[in-house]
Length: 114
Image (cartoon, rainbow, N blue to C red; front, side):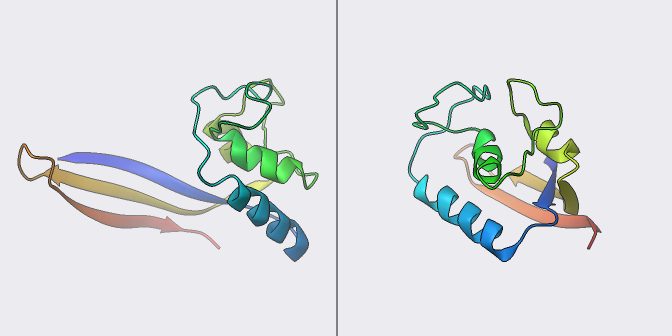
């Protein structure tokens, strides 16, 4: 059995206009590839994204999600940002049923914060 934990965060203290604009920007990026390079300057033409997509979308609204202000934006930067708050933490467990890649999985919500 495999098990992973995941946490969902939200950006706190945003206006409807900021959320709308951020969502629109992210939607316009659909279909573009992801790059594992989290450098803010890498792929500045925005042909590829990593977690800097969320950073870039909110940065356009004047909200910097980068915790340490370095040249990279990592998931831990966004999680540790004073601009974000945890809303749910959950565990996903899955079992490989056979060698052909069939998967059975369950989700267990372990914490919910408002």
